[in-house]
Length: 197
Image (cartoon, rainbow, N blue to C red):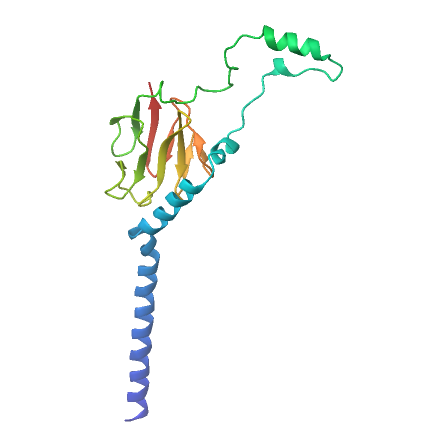
């Protein structure tokens, strides 16, 4: 075997090696998107084993200004003020949160399924490209198992399932399960939806 034939053989083997590395890189990059079940199962197990206070800690409850007293106020004045207050819950600033009682439908406002409505029940709604999702969104910016909409203490919460491109509530990317206000856009991939009465 001459030097030129040996060089040609080494170049062919090198080209095959680079080609196989390229193919393996593509398979590795697509693996998590094609076979996302394992990640999803671990997240559901972690959510099931988490204490119920995990969501409550992420959602601070505002304190009404009427309950704040100067340090010099007596205990009797505070007691009189608390007993004189009406029994209604304090008003929250901002839009009204979607609950099991006031939110009856999910309305897609933009994207391929714009105008489509889904009735809301007590079941959680999984969103993603996978065929086993409750709401299937097929676009390049949606992960196989992208997000989950669920009832927590009678309030609708949106949770991002570690998606590649994120879930946005009113323009802000979610990091923790977050309450969804009524008529507020939730964006997943190229699709936006709102919870409505």
